[in-house]
Length: 450
Image (cartoon, rainbow, N blue to C red):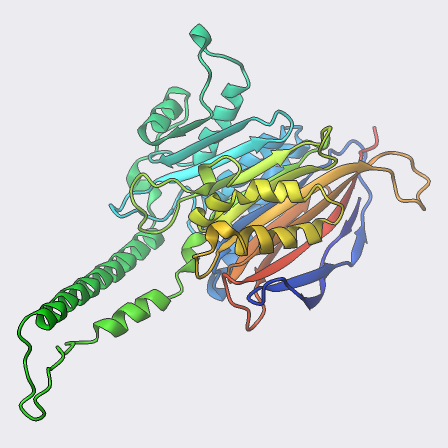
């Protein structure tokens, strides 16, 4: 196996929009390892969300990404399907109290946890998803079960099996198929409860200020239409005075960086046969309206996986993160997969993030477009020219890109002793929502000797 990893330089690229700063990270530093006899090959790339990752919690984010990679690789080495490997990675990410998925997810307006998750199999192109799901510890396990059940064919009386369930229906289906329920009290952690209380206080303050401003505006309009109070000194109409610092409070609230609530989790995998799979899981935005479903559950928005075919020279897998509404309106996962069929994966992803996301006409009225992706593409190729061996090699290119302040990722091949982790950050001076960071590497996986 030959791997090319490591950040060696950064350069700023020109962009079609003056508001976009594209950061190109050149990846080199080759490292060669021999494939062990009989050892299965495969590769996994995971993310713990695109948002904001504080230095104080960097160790925890990296650690959970490392564990998620290890779980996926263990599955691949045991001969499991790519979908089972990607599910294992996400279960590990969902079980962490530091991620916004499964355990410890953001609470909605009513103080409840409702989760979204989806998974896609690149070989069969089947898809499974759940939205606004409560009472299940690992939503991705339900999505994976939906995918598996869907592959069995039609139900009794010729009914088509569901691939996407929401709310109470998703919960009942999960329990009926042997997935254990989880008491709501276990799902919320002290971190998520504390964040909920803080956010509720901010919301109540903002609503009070907005109410005061509306009333003030009405009084001002009433005074303008009716009799006006004249100033005793100059005889001109007096303007009503604003009491307190409501305007300052609203401004402070609107400028506060709350991008840390965008940390959806996801993973992409390629197995020994070259089959790819992708999955994503999220607790959604903080204080979301009950019943809201984000990109993590929606086809073509949260994840995408597609094996090599007649019109697709590369197998691709994509998982997204960020503001769900932005990702839904741009169908970003599917857009990235299509773009990766061109020769230069790095340039294709950069242009997609610039033109199909930040510069999307569907998001023209947004002040900042927040999101991130991890992508993987693979193809069969011959061994290195200087090599005397003729056995085929699986070439894997992996990239991550984000417009948020940061994104935490981890990656590992089946021949690695341990996973590599990294928190990608926008460079100093770059504006979140208007700038793009992109990094990645290349991995060559040699078929194991028999």
